[in-house]
Length: 357
Ligand SMILES: Cc1cc2nc3c(=O)[nH]c(=O)nc-3n(C[C@H](O)[C@H](O)[C@H](O)COP(=O)(O)OP(=O)(O)OC[C@H]3O[C@@H](n4cnc5c(N)ncnc54)[C@H](O)[C@@H]3O)c2cc1C
View (cartoon, rainbow, N blue to C red):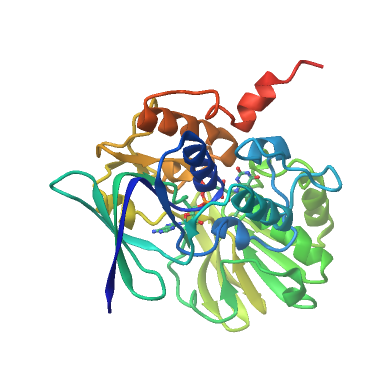
């Protein structure tokens, strides 16, 4: 394969164009810092695979970026579609030069200073030089696996795309947190026979959108949704799944649940490959990158992390878009050595600036 060289000299390379990568790009542009920006797929890739019309839990002010208001026609929380349109609008408004469908696969520190970045646009490998790197690569690169027989069968998926698929079908949803509950309700309303398998004794109310809880509880109580608590799947076959009943975490018996489709809603994992290649130390049970909270710089000088990438594989979600905006401010300050009014524009800063009502 041909190897191309980008001969420009960049101060910063941003990897990842989710909300936080885009917010950082706007901040660097405003600060006059030359940067190059890579995205392995399309902007907002993580949001793009949510099911149609999924709404953010976070309110609009908290997921707005770069000081650009996120306004929805019904004043409701933004949907997937509205937010993707909003990201396109921000990228267009600031004319951000994002290199789309160009995954970064290698980062090498150069003896003479800075980094060599290998990326893969459709035309072949490209080499780009930048003095500093910011990884805004998120934390949900691939679905968690059950590690059981039958997981690869064609009627089994980890991505919920469209409730219509499950009309008049028996759908077993594995999981019990917010995504599983939302999927269960939407598919139930689309005419699916929904069955839930969850390893805990009951649904974790605190991690479920508050407006979904009464409805799912009512549907389970009435038997309209068949919930098997304290169960784990052990084998998937066409037409049936074997569930293992647990008591106090210990297996007590197996039983079969007939179903046409299986949706695993058990979370996602971070791909640590690039972080490791960059020499970043990972720590804790979530294998989260180690960084200096004041600057977002990792143990590797000149390599920063921002956005949900800092959380590793989050076992319980604590890092969201809404508490990542300050990463941008800190990184721009660390890179430019100045905190100007221009870069302090996060929505949180805007909210604080509003007069109290
Ligand atoms: C159903 C659902 C609902 C959610 N609701 C909320 C919510 O209400 N509030 C909230 O804050 N969060 C929510 N989240 C999580 C939300 O998706 C993340 O908080 C948000 O996307 C994180 O933004 P980010 O910019 O940090 O990372 P991401 O949006 O994950 O962006 C990372 C980007 O990096 C790119 N990338 C990765 N590796 C490379 C590479 N090697 N080279 C180039 N590019 C690369 C990816 O393609 C991706 O576009 C939800 C998630 C799901 C699944």
